Image (cartoon, rainbow, N blue to C red):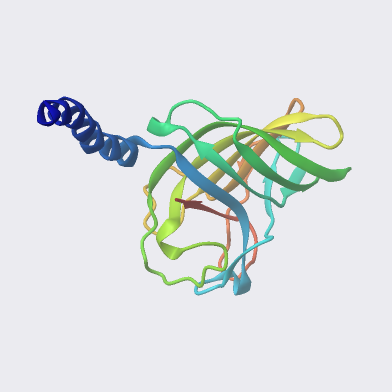
Length: 195
């Protein structure tokens, strides 16, 4: 009798235990840190530090410059958004400045893990967590404007088609002309660490 109970209880538990870890590993939520980074010296090996700045331009020539860092939990399957967010930074245009806060993850798509070359000194996270991809975040500016911030990371080994830097809206204005990073200049670089 005890042996039968053990089989009836044990088999479903074993089956669930065998399937559950594969499901979580294959399609689990991604815990992501994003940074607008400072690349000391503007070239590898860096180091990569938080606290950099990135800029984008509006069609009227107005420039916005952001600093920023934060975290989010991206749902499994690269679909949907999340309110599990932290972070923000500072903003500055030609006429005003302030802070912004991240309110929501709209979407995050991981393109691939970054290649190990060139070698960087990473003072933010593990080298094995560096990831190429794109995040879209809903943000709130300190002057009352809302916006949508796109953070793109086109690091080592990235497939074509990803921006390196930021693009954002602020109220009705679209800062979509991304300032590309230039070798030797410490600006316009971003980084994701995924765990």
